[in-house]
Image: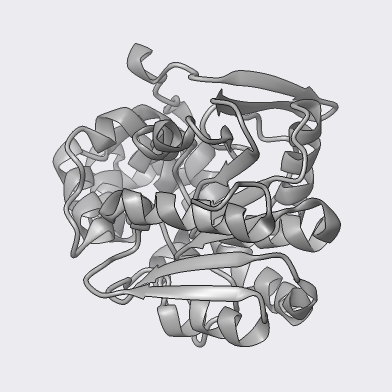
Length: 329
């Protein structure tokens, strides 16, 4: 199984290795990499939301609309702008939507070493408390699904329901590919990822996105909205690599507790998802938790909220109606 990475960085491994040698020279790789600086975000990817200050640092949250609280948690190597491309505005007439940048992603500070889904969920819950979030519907996509599940495990009586999109929920058979092992290693963290941050060409990123979205098309303007420079910052690449590399172990510890979840849970998972396997995650979750309703979608890949945003919107509404926080149609 290959876990969600919005830019599918594994496909860059071979090109990056050649680039390191060609640009820096074998004898000065470390010095060259150490001199690379993160690219700054463009003006059009400036913060869209507000900052919540915690003792560890700041969490960035996009907040829109009025109504029952709907928290959104993004997947690996992306940020809350993944939701502001479409889904936030689609739901803001019926909910108060709070889309967080996970710690170390987007405009949120690193906040120490919150590598586990449980640690990240704790931080986001504390940020949500400062925004007066009460009894929310919690939505999580891909890696964000594991954080949403951790949130629910920590606050079972304070989550109205969950909507999970292609969630990473269970440990999977086998190991991650070489790229993930390399990028999480000391060499990858200090040398390879800084080079990726500086040298990844736009055309290769576009190709990588097409593979992640497949078989569905990449929405026009998506990458520019998400922010190339935001996504390719060395800091974020490093954190993402470590989180992805360690996730399987954390899910192994979380999964036995899922049966205690009693809130309404709606799950959408595409049958063509080649990033987070339906059979290893959503189909196991529906077996473990009585309150899960799983929608399997033919012809859908890894990003349901872009492949069929109205289906996702309807599913969020159904979660809220099951939870009693939204009146039935």
